Length: 81
Image 1 (cartoon, rainbow, N blue to C red):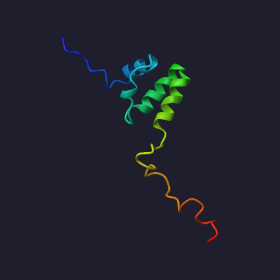
Image 2 (cartoon, helix red, strand yellow; image 1 turned 30 degrees about the vertical axis):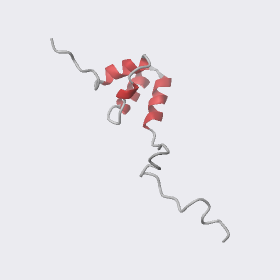
Image 3 (tube, rainbow, N blue to C red; image 1 turned 180 degrees about the vertical axis):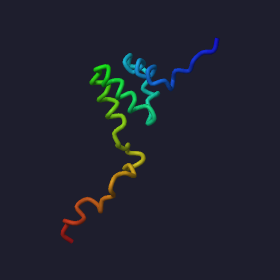
């Protein structure tokens, strides 16, 4: 009998997340479906964590996300020269 790969099944991933496992399985392709499952299940904490996971942010290694508007620099317009 062939073993089924559940690593891409949102239901399986959601069950893993409820157990505190499977965080590495969350990606851009399934995060919204997982948020909907959490909302439907009434799991507000997990739904919030998934919303925070998908929120645009950056780490210090790669700089700001390209969707952010570039700034002219800190206080460049208001500084007295």
